Length: 138
Image (tube, rainbow, N blue to C red):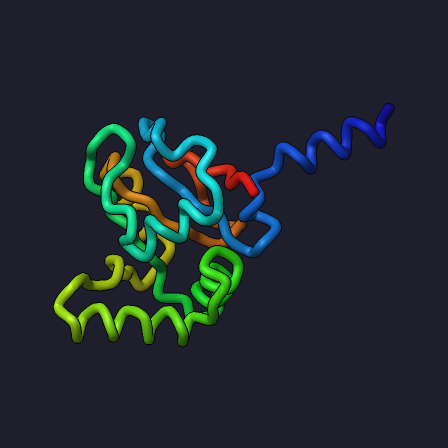
């Protein structure tokens, strides 16, 4: 019975926490419930620009290079350098600019806490009070 409870607890853990990061949104954001990794990628690459309720998505990223690379590899399936190249192409073509970047995780969390349309990611050890962790579906 104990093994079953442990297994169920692991299944309930946000998938991104196992990846070395957690995707977070404002607590009122119900549109982010049950997003897949592909959908999260689309939001951060600005290929999807609106939440289901019509609000404009505001992705925000931390400046930590190692954290960004873990996120890019797991969510986008590419290195951070490859994603940077994607953004350079977007900028050069006049299409879009990369997500807002904040130097510290605390700043990412502050943006997410204050803006219902924001989505960000932080390390698993970050203080998550006032945000909702997105449990990514496979």
